[in-house]
Figure 1 (cartoon, rainbow, N blue to C red):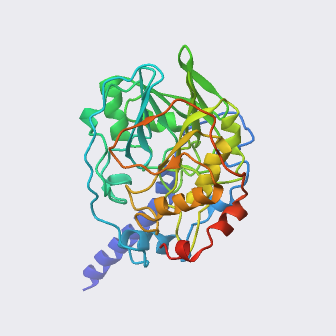
Figure 2 (figure 1 turned 180 degrees about the vertical axis):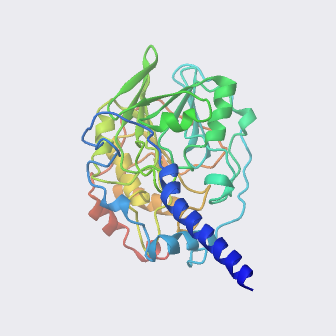
Length: 389
């Protein structure tokens, strides 16, 4: 008996020491210094931050603490409306190239979009993973990619907005790099994450730009978000939106973003007229009636972003692929249509995954009456909108 107690005691001591070491070592191991450089108005020498304030992105979007939040996310025991387990998609087979000013767009799903124009094939935040998370965990894809990977044309330019798993899919980037050697443009620090799989990326700060070819360039622009691959490496890499300068009008990719001070869309618009924009509308509701979270705009704010960009044509992204929050599957597009009626503007719609569409040549848009966020929310305060879960 005494020997058994000694053995048990020894095992307990070993476990205690192992747990103590894990608590000490593992968080540091999971932390990464993706970037080191001079301090700026959005980098303190160690971590990036939103210059318009970080409080709304630092707290969890729902009550109950971190453990409770993630438990409810994993189990679905939070009263959220049911989503379809599978959405029918007929994948497109895009042409190899689209020349001149013609622009052909195919939504692949979530924030992944194929834009073909000027003989260039441009791909945003390509994610082909079945789950949006590490080690095969995370929300499961309900809609197959709108273009099968093997049917993608040769990709020339890839934009990667930040390092969250539903936007930076290392496996997809590795396959693209090995197949096509595209020019990958991202914001500071994310090149380190992309480089872990052997792909090379150009990492830029907000306000910097890189030439793609004569007459075509990519500018990295401000938005309002945060970054992390693990809990402990929060904001070690920067998040961003992008402007692709092109003959005939620019492309704007918002990436993943909250509204913040609401001034950053106008900053992007100053780089030239926006012919086509991709703006998120989903993953905004983490409590009943919520219209946005600090990190994610909802349709109400997305309509204001479209207006402040002065975009001639915008497409809704970041909805209908992975269930990341509590709103119903088709709540975002329904709410977006109502928000556009409130603003009186034109040209911002939700499209179907895998259905290519033409973007017309740039023409000065009808953006409607300029609105403040409070005005938009009052306009959407109707029984019809309140009934949407």
